[in-house]
Image (tube, rainbow, N blue to C red):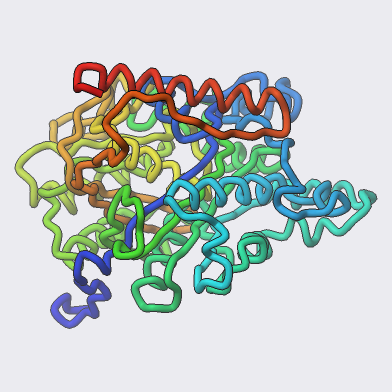
Length: 472
């Protein structure tokens, strides 16, 4: 089709009408929250686990490592008004999404009670459900109705039910690009007036060995369980748990703005001679070219790109070539590139949200976290070898501006989104004194209270250290 005649879905709007990320919360392998995740990726940690105890470590048909979240069995059912008779057949994934939905809304400066009756949409991004397989097919003798507690079609509805929100509520499944497709869908709904805000939630759990075995026989998992994007020793990824929730609003309604969601676009590979799971260079390149043409942002303005980059033999070279040919011709400096999968492996349907979390950390701290396990590029990585693309291997100053993020489903569902940082300087409007403050906390256990007290103490020390020379 003639590009001059192609429909352009991007519409420029006033700043107050822009869609923004105002809240985020999540849990990652060996990282109980965004702050721990930030510390771990800045410290170049590989967050995989050898002793995960989900199944025997001596199954020679599977890699020994997965990325494991902590405490997936713990849940305060009473807080979320879920009866004991129901909670024992409730997917651990929905338990975590309820918790992190609450946190993400609070993170946006909003009381969840304010949302009751509002036209807020809930879009979940969940693909393969290990729990559904385990409870419905292998443990049908368990009392209750796991068809209600483990049905991924109802997870978004359950969040809507608990919050009392009435906007569209459904799940999107495009495999590894699910969370990005869900973000784009939420963006479109807010832009078009279908809803006033959106909760986008995604979770992945590696509970059942059969799913991991299937991926291993597909040839996408590394034998040793390490994820090495772009490296000559890279030959697949490590599967991982993750749960992330993002809260989207219009800028005029937001009390906090992490980043502006400038634009999002999707496409599909369609037929490929190599087979359905093989990535398409042509369609990935087309997606990037059309994306930046439609939104009117020159690729020269990209300060960094967070790649899909799973470390697979087929995927990484195709994505890198598409980025190189679609974007570098319009740049005169190397493009900084990285992949959070080197730290946490591939969380599949949640992977796009993990990329967003890393990008928001860069925007908040001014530092891009490094890609680990990269020593020497593979021979087919000519864009890296010839210097047009530079892999970020050390904590690197971020100059501000735009960051692009790629996400691809292994069936050919491709997505790219563009985020812009919030340049507003944060101002502490509290009183300019060092009088003690009363902090009220509560917890169900002594351990919970201690964790909160320790966190408050750390924040006080950081604040006092940063402000002791400023008359505070």
